[in-house]
Length: 314
Image 1 (cartoon, rainbow, N blue to C red):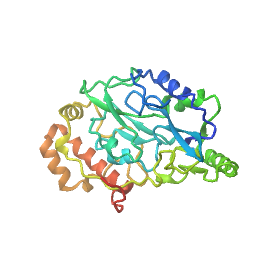
Image 2: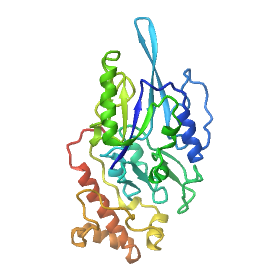
Image 3: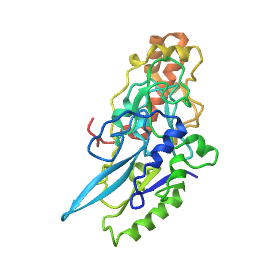
Image 4: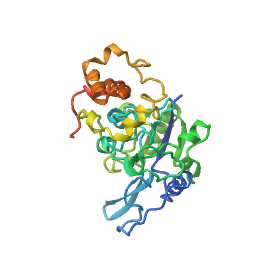
């Protein structure tokens, strides 16, 4: 069953223990910052910071209150980052999160540009000693919350949920958390009339959902996040190290993951067409697999909504 995380903003006390736990588990370095006139720190997500608590000050009739909102990867079902990755470095996992293969990532930044939540960030290849990146180094790759994939696959809960003192972060079966989130919103309505369960349906259902005490925009979340259309990726932009890695068998043409819903386990050769044949000629006999990889990536983006009406400004 798909897993998910539920963040309850009404329970969060902004202790930021989740930020520390994330840093400790992934051995991420501290980021030097300066005072920006707010208690929140650091000022934004980065390659070294995958989870942070956003502070929003709300004034009402002479009174002030804080809104505390978790900021990290949403692990969308309809994930823009998966759709736009030209080398299949990002893939949906059966447990509900989006995986990143930094060894395969070419640092093109398309996931950074098209994520409706502005989550992925480019950074150095050796940010975390627990993430293996050897090919083509030194180079930049993308990072964001992994939903503690290693812990979840071992039957544990993410480090941030494990450490949260007030229980504002819950982790479990997504279906159970949807029911829990609905019940919590109904209980909050008397005090917070605009309470809302964010992520139940957005982008096909997020795997990081929120119990909000105010409208999503007030919490700094897009009211109606959309997956739009994206420009094509030119094969000429593939770096030399990536082509050589495929040629030498250091990277598989396709990752050892199951097919996406609605797509065959392997792309039929007759469907690749003249475009792939031209690509094979361009790359040479030794890198014939690149054609299949790009053909697979193109069909994957189409299957995930590239042909939908454009709803997002590029």
